[in-house]
Image 1 (cartoon, rainbow over the protein chains, first blue to last red):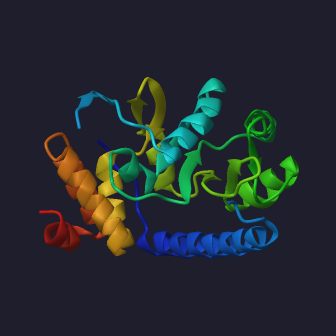
Image 2: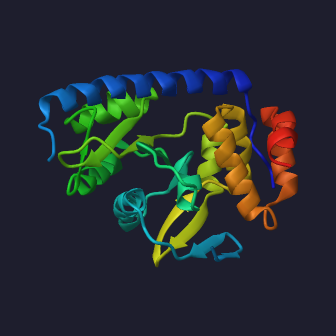
Length: 40
Length: 199
């Protein structure tokens, strides 16, 4: 099976971008939690 | 755990967890629209029994034009909402087409969510092309080839990712294409990690 070209620097950049997107999501989630009542 | 593997199809039964149900609900909408997609990353190990959960499920979707994406958006909106924006044009132009993922969750929730993205690099395009069909309890969806998943998890290098790689490797050891794993290990420079943690 033919495999694709892989640029490791490109992968590292994407890994960092994904991490930043997850951090942004955490901010959004915490804001949402603050506005949401506790389930009992 | 009995798993039937035939050609490009993996079929098995399991007790569905909350994340399985969520993935089945979302992918059934993409299946209905005949959209080509592939699930990558952590959920694959969870699907095959790894004892952990995840906040998100990564899905690479073939690049869609705006009209087709709007159809997908409207269909998904039946049970899910986009966390990033309520505007379909903004979702397409400012996010997907700019290389930024969208997150979709069930209405009134944020977790779990689908991380929805277009292919960014050759590896993403290859993964969509070479996707494998999984049939679980009669529902089907598509995942990345396990050989890539194992090498890629090693590349990510966290303890969680190495454990996921080991889980998949040990579970599917007898059916994996070792030539393909060696090729990905070479390209991703994960040969040492593979020898240290998987063998």
